[in-house]
Amino acid sequence: MSITVLKNATLSDGSRADITIEGQMVTAIGSSMAPGIDCSGLIAMPAFVDVHTHLREPGFEASETVLSGTKSAAAGGYGAVMAMANTSPVADNANVVEKVASLGLDAGYAFVQPIGAVTLGLAGAELSDIVAMNQSKARVTMFSDDGNCVFDPSLMRSALLEVKRFDGVIAQHAQDPTLTQGSQMNAGALATELGLKGWPAIAEEAIIERDAKLAEETGARLHICHLTTAGAVEVVRWAKKRGVRITAEVTPHHLLLTEELVRSYDPVYKVNPPLRKTEDTLALRAAVLDGTIDVIGTDHAPHSNEKKQCEWQNAAFGMVGLEHAASVLQEVLIEEGGRDWGQFASLMSTKPAEIGGLAHFGSLAVGSRANITLLDPSAKREILSQTHSKSSNNPFAGIKLPGAIEHTIFNGVFTYRNRKLEVLKWPEK
Ligand SMILES: [Zn+2]
Image (cartoon, rainbow, N blue to C red; front, side):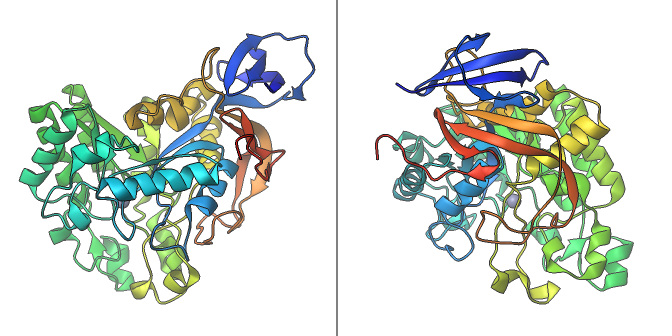
């Protein structure tokens, strides 16, 4: 069995230790006489988990594949990604979710947990076979029509009752479609000035409010994808205070970028939900600090140049996110927020693993699976438009951000080492 010792790493509580990995497991954390890899100055955390990734396979392989997407994940410090269901065919049945899971195993760069569609074909009319997907080999516990909102309240209520049977969760893309037909950017004075149809905050907030009530009434678990408005934060805070089983996510881009960027008409800034105002980003950052927002979800949404390098009106919505999410959170939580790496690890790993039901993730302790990220907090780097993703729709390209992922370890194997992707030679292959 291979033994690796990570020497003198800084744990998220600030203490220093040698971490011993034997095979796939962490077997000791303390001081070790054995030689190993010098990790002085690096923060060791449980590998990151993304509850919101679009891997695009099957169906949209020109934009991303499970292999390219998980390479991007490994480079971003992720050990696991949860793959959204809006593929072609849609992941609304046991066959497709099992296929996506097996593509993940073949790729080997990260654990891929498929998310099942709530409704057949994401059409919002009829529930998919949620229980069959849960009982499949892919063991799906999170369901989402992301890209679309589950708009029909009776369907949403049925979906919540269905997942409650196995303590699963519905992840809602909160967007009232009747209020956002043809919408292109955040509603307000700037949308009027730019001649683009506005996307009102109420379209998001009204759905969250309704669904919080449905979650309360059914006692089921609800997760809200990509919060973007100050009002949405208020609703989640209110629901949590009432004891509703609700969790919330924010993307890296909604924490730092605002609608002002749309002035350029550069479609790299076109995203669903849209970039909002400065006061919204400030409210989202405050909600990350005070725990109202539970997790960072990248909403990594790769699109080929064909879909992005065109006029704003015709461009696809979405941005890549896996390789800079940790740096954005370091900027917001550590540099600006003055918080610690324990809270960082909770937002990037522990809570996402808990929400997604990923047993082998979210903890770095003796006896836990060796899924570990080592981050260099002192690094400063310029974000590149494209590295391992097949797509380059990156709004952070050219921006300097703090921190760099030094190593990522997945199931005891380095997938990313010394800031470079590893060529994997898994023992079993
Ligand atoms: Zn979405």
